[in-house]
Image 1 (spheres, rainbow, N blue to C red):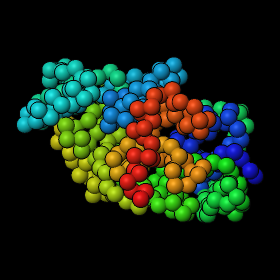
Image 2 (image 1 turned 180 degrees about the vertical axis):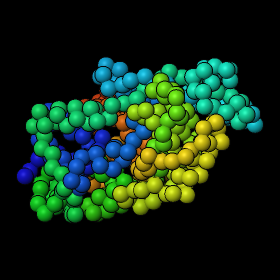
Image 3 (image 1 turned 180 degrees about the horizontal axis):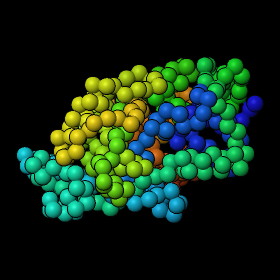
Image 4 (image 1 turned 135 degrees about the vertical axis):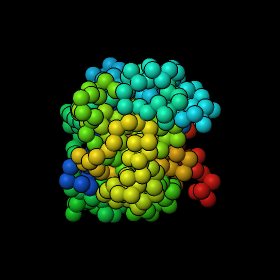
Length: 361
């Protein structure tokens, strides 16, 4: 098979790119796992919070807002930041960063009755956070890609790729493919794919994040509770289908892998959550972990690699893949089509691999 564009990776990055690129030419998407969106995209907190992240992430997330608010994939959630009496300055910084409205303790308890007034002195809330129906979103992009002619193959791990006669020769799942452009949307494995192509890696680092699902406090309806983030950002809680998701919000470097929760890290995070609330954690309903992969400057990498013709990076989204994906997919489309990016040159430059040019020497 000889597509114009071959996408490596079937998570949110690869699927959104396929949906936007398929109208431009023939597209083949290869996913290593037997199912799409198996790793990070299946283990997301599924939140759209356009103020969360560094400047480039915020710009991309805000540029995704028009799509999201017209999509039907969002439902109101809200986000609350809480902190203790010793960290007034830190809380004030969060108020500014998240555009929070400060709450009295009585107001905070009215929204989330399990907060412990003995532990929490400050609380602020914003209504700018929304739950994302990630399953429906991924299904839409898959339908759009296929409807425009894209082919999607699973259980096709890329084992070799090289440039020959102006085209990329790719071996995956025991089959051979040839493509004009290869898009590296392999998530935690993006540097591994680059190395297989003979391209020096960019230093992308997967970071593990663990999650526990615990029962909601008896007698309380948690469905309208906001997501709550601790002041040191070392735990968060989010309602989920009548239960609570609690994460230690760790960023532990690990190799690319099918991640699992670290029991000790999870226990420490749950202890930090328990210290801020009046409910005990008596049992877990489930636990898991995902990988959040960052470039050295914690900004996504989107664009052609200057060292290898036709090799395009789409990696390093960290934990912000869903909330930034609509804008990033449009940027990918514009860059592949060779036209000025609608998102603007400044954001395109901020995420370009050219920012690592000193490392290319």
